[in-house]
Length: 122
Figure (cartoon, rainbow, N blue to C red):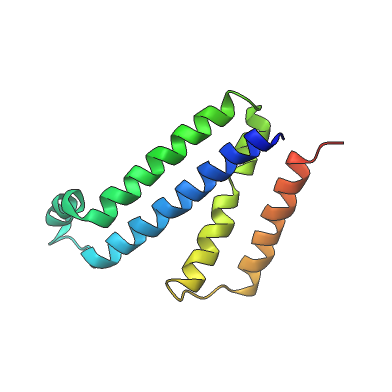
């Protein structure tokens, strides 16, 4: 993977993780959904700044991913963006104080090892 391709991958991953952060922040602001408030939640999502920013970040991530796909094969790009799972879990831990069980850490280490093997070039 060239430095330009890696930059596109990084932009896609960072944008997607930022999108998840803002969507979670917006979801916390909205509160829990139930049968009685589902419709109002949908309307409130449209005007909640965090949700709008999160969706915009996802859009930027998608653009970077499409640009990456013009340069590398799907068999490299697809698994590489799974790093979003790793960074999202870390974001949840450090920002939202979510716990990370040992089994999840093992799974995340498999993801990291898999991405390294996928992008490794001789």
